[in-house]
Image (cartoon, rainbow, N blue to C red; front, side):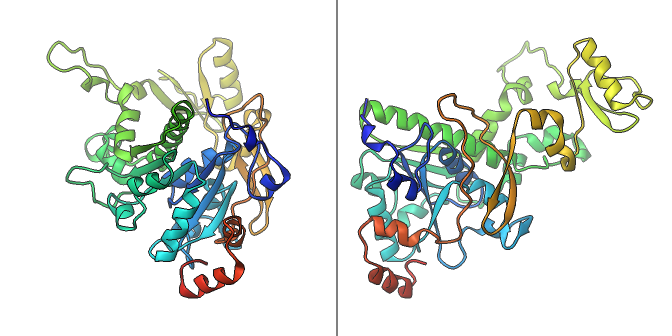
Length: 370
């Protein structure tokens, strides 16, 4: 076991981005963009890691401009990039590539979700960076994996939904439909975060890092398989086929809303939702009200469990976000540190490498940093 006693948080650590949590003392370089990689890095940041988000100067992560926003801050960016520091580095510039190599020497994890071959072309592959730091855990997230006819295709969540059987399952024939959330981006993020922490655990035992590879398609098929694909799990004859598990659930309209329960065939339109929930509860029948998104924050169970928290963001104002779903008895959840403006911590992080401000200014003029 590696002794990390020297990594205990100090006031200097706090200034450089360290937080309490089970991953306190670990440093992550997040080179990823959009959702799958940044959300995986957010999980590690929520758990105490010092996550440095590396973004292109000038425009940054493209998701900064996606969806609902206020004062130039998008809600999705604010959540999946909270608790991170931002440094603006041009990975296409030789100086930018050298800065990544210098940062890697003190990093525990590098995370990237470029298409296969991109990091090799930049001189920042696992082979090249692990030669600098053999203890490095290097995460690569891809859409389809590294081989096969679709490996180089540009991939978004809806593509994976279609390939993994999910669109077929939503309604067969002419009723094909996508799931109205980026399910597999987020499942891949959670899977990747778990893969990284498992690799870190092994590294603590062996003192050697490794390359962790996760594809969205691989993750989606794995995620779907237990019940969505149970009719296709047995090879050969003699299979007793079954309807989908989801066929057991029904949405029933009530007098003032709707509920979801299993095998609910009765007309419930004459009942008030609260009365119907009470009736089902008396008979220990699992049932849930259909909660509209606009009402979610005020639902009694959401509030009682303190699932949501509010905090002030310097750009976006008051934000409401879910806290980490993992509750550690030894590490109570902290108020999140707001997502950073593009390059907000560039000077701070490069100063930690011993780089003088004048040199930073020269590199900024060259377009290597921002």
